[in-house]
Length: 157
Image 1 (tube, one colour):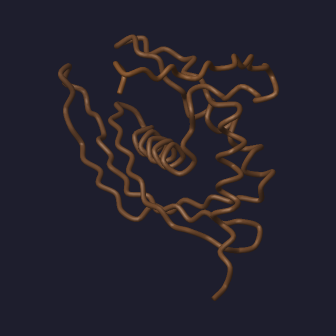
Image 2: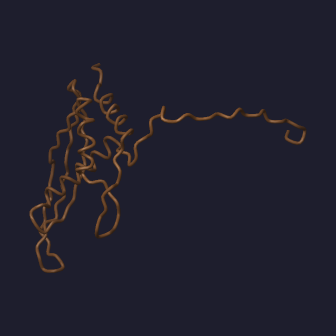
Image 3: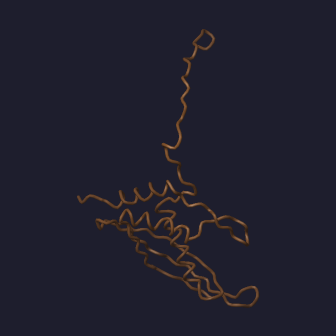
């Protein structure tokens, strides 16, 4: 049986990513929630996956594009994409995963937005991106307090 190497590479990516994390530093102006944008994710993740020889290839497996009318009478495109991702390591070992992206846009960006959604969904699932990084274990010393042995008496038995 051929030794699988992709899992070791992805584990190394997850380990490095757990140290830095990707904070939710952006804010949605309409609903007011905080989020991590795809640029935040890619800027943090790209050097880490490159360091570990990981390559991610997306492939649109299916698409559903519908035109709808907005409440103001305009036209919007509603897109749902099913995207297959093949993740390779430097040894040529690979795994496959599927993610979905959905978007509505009144201009020409619905497909791009849906693809971005699929990318984000896949990356969050595949490499378990934390919001906060872990502090270095050597960064602080833990002071241990010697514990006292419990006193056993007839009442505690």
